[in-house]
Length: 456
Image (cartoon, rainbow, N blue to C red):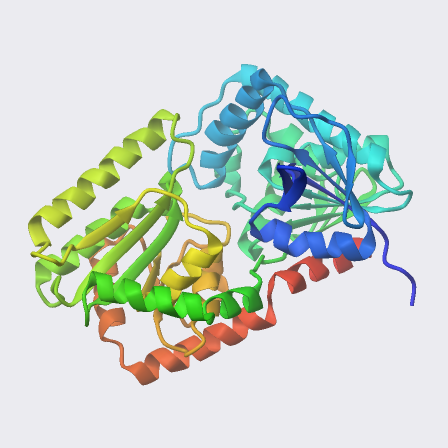
């Protein structure tokens, strides 16, 4: 059997950080999926350290190389904070917030993408595989192809790709599409996103073909969905440790014996619909069919982009909502909403997932949403109900969840009531199906599937 070709991963961030005199792997699905593949195949990971002052000297980690890319403070502002997160992020999430288009932001985006492409070209083996990730680096595939035409280049977009009529807003739409068409394989979370891309490429570039295969500059480009997943076994085992069981039991005792827990875990981001789900919980309590001595809502919201004005405004609105709900419905010793504005470790989250009765995952738009899959993996006793937004990519796979429209406040309140009252036998049947889906298609299968497509 021939030895698999080495791979180069190109991502915005590196997979490790320095802790004292050693390197520690960063948490996250991408690192979990791809570091094992790199260890097995060899190759390199190209990315930014997170600091403008960090060294760019490459070093060996396990069986592969780490190649840092330097980004100055000014470039971080233009490339990352502005064009990536004030233009592309809202546009790709269906313009939930109006994107900003400032032409001065485009140059740093091009410069940084070129630097990433140059770094990848310098470390890739001849005829090797290069896998580029996400919306920050959409110009890299074409730039890299110009430097290294011998390579097989793949690109995966972790966020949604918008419908053609929204993508048309982008002043640099042709440049972005041409950048992505430099890849041999362009992957998305859902078939809908893949379709949106193919249609935009045919409309705004001289690309021809179908939704699944495009021809551009006499090259064939495969376009497909590769829904990302999680390390199922890690979450199942983490939720089953004596410590996790003890912490889950303590949490249930602290919120009040006999109360059912509705749990949400998000970054503090306007795409997540945190305010709308709190309004739905408030609407449910107002009906008085589920009372505060019977249930409690726990919202974990890890801080995100807090210096940005829109995020600061959103945080204030959410905290005012929490205060209003608690002021109206809490009773002595029984708070209606517990709100945590801080990050939790994966181990802590596993305990919270285990303690919850209902997991509420209701983004306004999301490429996938791995929290939904993490919750499912922790339900080793097949209990619990997942309430899931129809606008999360995960809804395409997790069809046994209770699917909701997050903009329908009363409909979500209905779903909360249904989930809280669902017979155990129904919940167990649904969860058994959900667990089978996530177990069969874990993050390692996701990586293998993409790499098989890329290897041709």
